[in-house]
Amino acid sequence: MTGLRNRFEMNVFSYRELEAYPVGSNEALIVVVDNERWPTRVPEEFVRRLRLRIPHADLLDGSYEAHESLLRQAGYALNFVRLHVGTIQRIAVASPDGEVRGPGLALGLIVALDFTSDRVLDLAQTYPRLSRTLRDHVLRAAGMLPATRLEKAAHSPLTKAALFLLAKVTEGRFHS
Image (cartoon, rainbow, N blue to C red; front, top):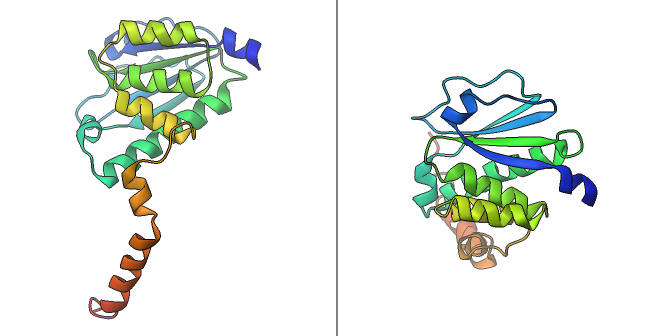
């Protein structure tokens, strides 16, 4: 598998670059979209595609819902790459121009899947403002980072007991 990983490539593109990209054989695409921005044209030649809905606001929002949403999207991307790493030679990660999400996602995937370290340094230097939040969510989805304080609190016995007590106290009050 190590030789396969050394031959595998992951590149980051803006939507504009993606539109003019000459797709080779055995290439897959991960597109980061949100409600405001979509690519105008996606080349049909990609053998596999994954669209991830990652609103830019979720990167800034510290809520549990935003955290869970980012973790779910990171898990989708991680599973997509794991599933196709043996049959795909390259994955393009596309996000809007000047974006931080595509590079952050790509860096997280490269580190999580233990690809070559020179690509990690190259991405970090090329995109110094990449989303470290998204990178960390990919690493967390891969089990490479410890649980956050928010996750620990949500799964603590004290929180579960408080939710159970709240459910008992309000039992039947909200039924119509």
